[in-house]
Image (cartoon, rainbow, N blue to C red):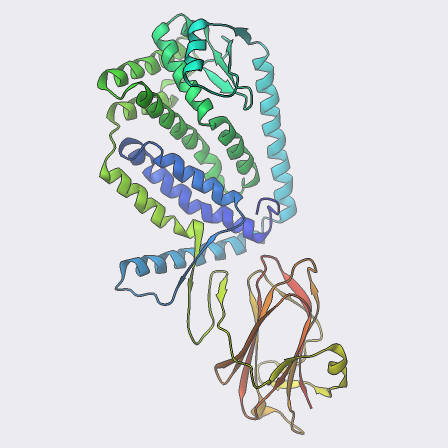
Length: 457
């Protein structure tokens, strides 16, 4: 989540957002030309909501059926999700949290510098009271007070300020009644739709998730899509006719031409060209809505984790784990106290893979990872033992601990339970049986503690 911005889970979100950004960049032109007005903006908004929100959707499915198109898509999405998690884990070893905090601080200082510099430019602006501009403001029925300023040092009209918005115009715009109408309608639409607030949120999120370079690069396309959406809103408000579109495109070309005369903008880099083409050809179609729906479907790995459920086994896909409850009515497995533990006679457990199991040292389980231990009671030597003990002590971090213990006997699960503190389990074992013990870390941070597994009599 944004408060704990640099744990591995936050880094994972940054990498998972790659998928949605690529999808948006691939389809944004088609959506702007053929889908409903806000199609691209909705996808961009979902991207930033995902980056900010600490929660995600969990999709559970019992079986991936290749004959079912939907299940097959879920299988592909689950596979992509697993790859992204692996990449995130590898990168986290290089991008240490301390380094990421330092870079974020540097970027925030740069953004603050840009705001201060922009504020100095705004001080040269002079407030005016133009009757025509005031009429346009009144027509929008805004609850906030909007002021009009003149600043010929800026190349194009600018709107800034959240609670008390200000529209900065140039003298040549006020002298042209037709141009003034379209400019005012455009800027007032920005204010009405709270695009300024959205812009601030985008800049803040970009500073935090700078380690995703594609996010930084895509900001200029986001800004362009907001302008295109605003163009469509203006045309819709004035009446979507061929004549209205034609006049609106003329106003954009006039702004572009005026900037070129003052050597302020290069034509090949001017985004108005794309906006004019889209305004000329825009038409809402079924194909556009289909492209939007398909894009949203294939962006599911960003918003959700896909988990396969199994009735008899433990299945781990990505970071999600689904456990089935087990009947322990016979009391073979008990949670005991420290006093009861001290009364038991303990001995090491022999296991071919590990020689002897006695974890008296500190063990660490990575985020959403597990430890696995295997042994065979048929190989126990010496006097007969009654069973074995699992002891977890001094688990950290103390603030919040979530882990799951699963015990299998001869490939059948005999116990599973979720804990949030130190625990001691006493298990009565069957002679000649094979056991597997899983300890799952359910936290998005490392779990450290003293883990002991011993035989007892």
